[in-house]
Length: 80
Image (tube, rainbow, N blue to C red; front, side):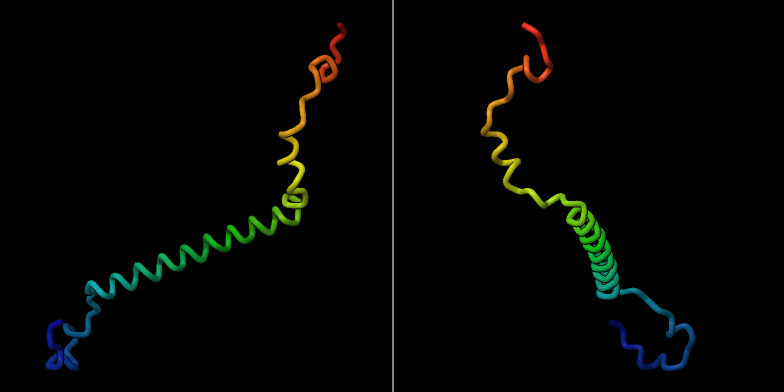
């Protein structure tokens, strides 16, 4: 960084210049805000699914695979 002690009250020295550190910090703040917004969306999505009963029955879907299907004649009422 340049020494700006000689520019105490000169308008041309008071301009805001983005150096690499400031740009990096700005990007970090933007990324943190985006991640917090995304986390909030997922939290709302999860709470909505939990209220609607999405996670009430966790054992039946896993066991359902083990049972045989009904014969097609009983499923579609086909006469033989």
